[in-house]
Image 1 (cartoon, rainbow, N blue to C red):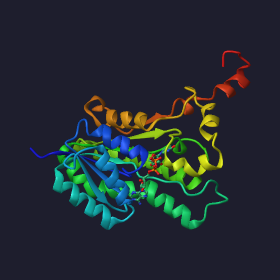
Image 2: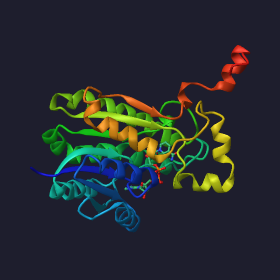
Image 3: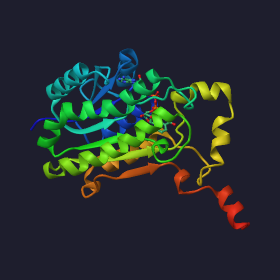
Image 4: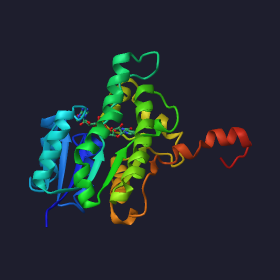
Length: 258
Ligand SMILES: NC(=O)c1ccc[n+]([C@@H]2O[C@H](COP(=O)([O-])OP(=O)(O)OC[C@H]3O[C@@H](n4cnc5c(N)ncnc54)[C@H](O)[C@@H]3O)[C@@H](O)[C@H]2O)c1
């Protein structure tokens, strides 16, 4: 029996590390893929033994690198789960978005997931495995960072495209759309406004922001047998952000109960 492998891209980041940790519960080996090799090595070493947490340094926007990534994964065992987690946003408004930024955000937040999927699809067919794409609430409504958001909206459709075309092979494809998660991706905004998370809470029904572990638990559910009849969906992990805003409900209804 070959070992079951989970691939997590962007695994040196806060959400990626939490996902890698969680997926180690039901995979023999987790392959941490990241462009930042020292950070990925440090993350893997902190997570556990080298035979449970392997590292592959790759720029997942490169077809050559994603092919090498697939080769490295096949050397470890059979890929059961691919988590397309690496992502980043470069410009806050359309006004600030250059053509180069537009293309770079699309390359990382959308095209890279296509490249990673195509690179490992034969192994996913053999294992009847699944893909979990880390999208964002930015792919569902407008919250700033336009190029990133358009790419995340595309990622949600890519999720459905894989579900419909590859369902016959037993491959499932789902997405998670996190709301605000306190990670290093927020460093610049938190430096500009130390209250940014406190201010964000008022828009969330649960009056808190998301923790990386919340995202990891949703990924584990979607990748695992409890979700065996679920494919092509987007699961918001957003503390209720996309359900609605109490302040707005109060204005519209004039009810004291919001
Ligand atoms: N933090 C949030 O509030 C939030 C909200 C919604 C969605 N997300 C999504 O969650 C995912 C993880 O976000 P995070 O906050 O942990 O980010 P992060 O910046 O902490 O981590 C991202 C990781 O991706 C890696 N990476 C970047 N470019 C890469 C490339 N070309 N090839 C390989 N690796 C690359 C980085 O080195 C980094 O380790 C992203 O897709 C992000 O869009 C985050």
